[in-house]
Length: 249
Length: 319
Ligand SMILES: Nc1ncnc2c1ncn2[C@@H]1O[C@H](COP(=O)(O)OP(=O)(O)OP(=O)(O)O)[C@@H](O)[C@H]1O
Ligand SMILES: [Mg+2]
Image 1 (tube, each protein chain N blue to C red):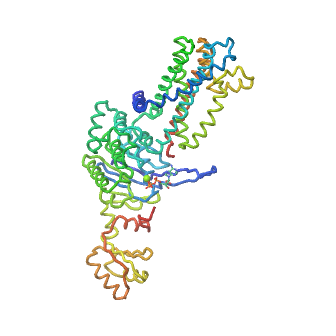
Image 2 (image 1 turned 90 degrees about the horizontal axis):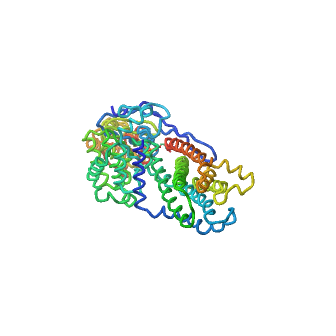
Image 3 (image 1 turned 90 degrees about the vertical axis):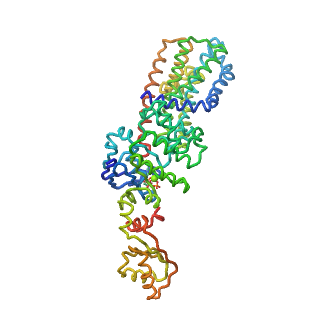
């Protein structure tokens, strides 16, 4: 099982290494947010100091790449439902979840590298975080990526249609990010928004990230975020396996 | 027996838009018995159910009803065991466009349990056999259709399986590549590999397979060796184009040396066992009634005549 997953991961990574520029584009967006948007947010924190603003803002911009970077991964898979690649793999001796997990593992690895770069830049700008918080944040990124990637692969296998998929991704991504308080904490908003946010898994991710960056490792949102994302990933993986089995009716 | 299927059926529920669905009976009761070491073909027009049948046997889709054992294992209950014993080259090919063919080949080899070294050795062997060594490291999307087909075949054979499924292996190949692929399929049989292939080319089924089934509308309409099937319709066929088809048909049907006469628009096909001797007699008979010919030809009966006999249409316009 693990062997098959790592074989698929290796295959994906070799592909990535042949075209290493694309993932770099992924970090341009959060870095621009850090450079041009964070300075506007001075008034939203108590002291208004840069390190405090960065601690509030960086986790949101990181969750954004975790979500958006991975949600689009499924588009490549739609083509493979038609060109026979998945058909061939489905009747090969491969452990079926490895077909999805290998790809998701690649997405997670890319995210972790991107997260290190973004946090590095935030640190240069003045962010201060501890090593455990840094490592936990990487774990959180990886787990968010696992959920978003497997959701995307599940959608691709279930819909097998680029058009429908891009509509659906847009449809979900917008409210998910808005109601998560990605850029500004939801606690600044009215009660109804805060209540709504509690139904959004991404909200826990962002809040857990902020707790980590405040060095508040005992905050309850951290285990909740990890637990929730793990359970959700399990559901999306199971769902994509079902879709894989039913790919041709 | 490497494949044994009983009354395989598959009904798809296809969407028709606006929430409506439609039941498509793709395969309607197929029985199969393929011996070890045979090249077995399923011949049929577009939409006959060939791909659906192969997909059920290769464990890609589950039959709606019926049972099948492949390499001794049940395709539903022991799918994992079946997968260890088959190679499958789908109609679409299944070569990853974005990576070099060698990568796909290596991955397929390693998934089956080979070490890196074994996989590399096996890959080299296949690259050599299919003349792919030169282009092994080029992204598959830069390859020609025929080169991609050969990679698809190499990937399907990487585990040296006792049974391979080839779904329309020669579609899109030029005559040269087609002939090469036929040789490769024959070489597989010589090594003891069993092959189940589908095709809608008559000459391919005729030249390549040991036994075949002819499929139409999800059912088997005829089966046997190519020679048995052709013998069923007689050895030769005279195709005539003339005015007064109806009169000529009656006349020819009454001739003792003609086994069967079929009319198709303004064409008549007369089946007879010994064309060389029958043809002059046939011409004389027509002349006696002053029926004038536009054209006439004498051919060996083909599998198309078998198809025609069983379905009332020619495979060429059956699609
Ligand atoms: N997933 C599916 N959903 C609905 N209908 C399907 C599906 N797959 C196949 N069919 C239908 O089943 C019938 C048989 O299709 P199949 O692909 O098995 O034919 P085939 O003999 O392989 O044809 P071809 O020579 O064109 O490849 C067709 O009418 C097709 O439209
Ligand atoms: Mg087909």
